[in-house]
Length: 208
Figure 1 (cartoon, one colour):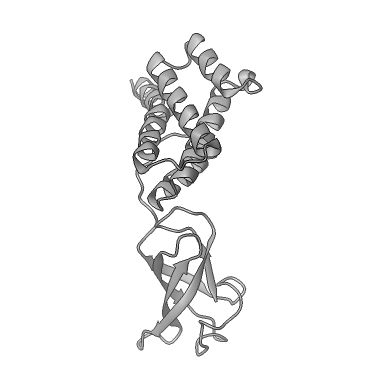
Figure 2 (cartoon, rainbow, N blue to C red; figure 1 turned 45 degrees about the vertical axis):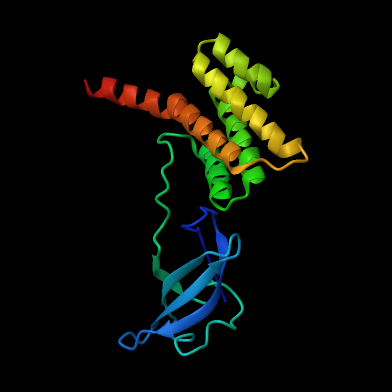
């Protein structure tokens, strides 16, 4: 049996957890606890399941299907949903790639993290300046700076992310942890200046 849900460890969305162990809470006739391992990075999560009358007495580990097809519901889980610190007010399309990047970083897949931090920048700069979407990233970054849409510091951070992502994608040598963590810091700072800070300023003006 698998449980399909978001992973609180690596932030992978709708990942399959393979149920490897189960135990019954004797006071609850239609309830079981199971241990599942994330198929992306093998991290464990305990799930509390509400069982259907057809599966209340069944052994879950060998069952084929997920909780939906088997008529079960996840009531709770440990650990809970990820509380990873991500910049506020970032558009979902941009945030999706940033979460993939930070998940790869936590899983020590540093090359994948570098590529996804660059992808985050690609999508963010297109979102900030749709009219420049067809330009190469290097020219798009400079255009954003020349048009006053990003500061000179943000331009420099963006070029660092661009170059680091290029190295991760094309160089034969793998990038090191320190390089991936630096890209994380640059990308985080870029998103906070591009989205979080303007939203805070707008909110304060609206409340005046």
